Image (cartoon, rainbow, N blue to C red):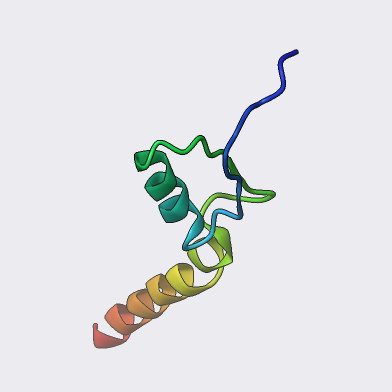
Length: 64
């Protein structure tokens, strides 16, 4: 097995990780993203985004 040759390793795929990985790749840097859990991090999967969707649904139901 050949070792992976990289220039930079982005740890975490939360709000900044994917942006940092894409930006570095555009500069020609060999960069693997590393994430222990789901891509998107806590905010996207269980925090901010799902909470806002739940609030929007509740407001729509209340308006009816």
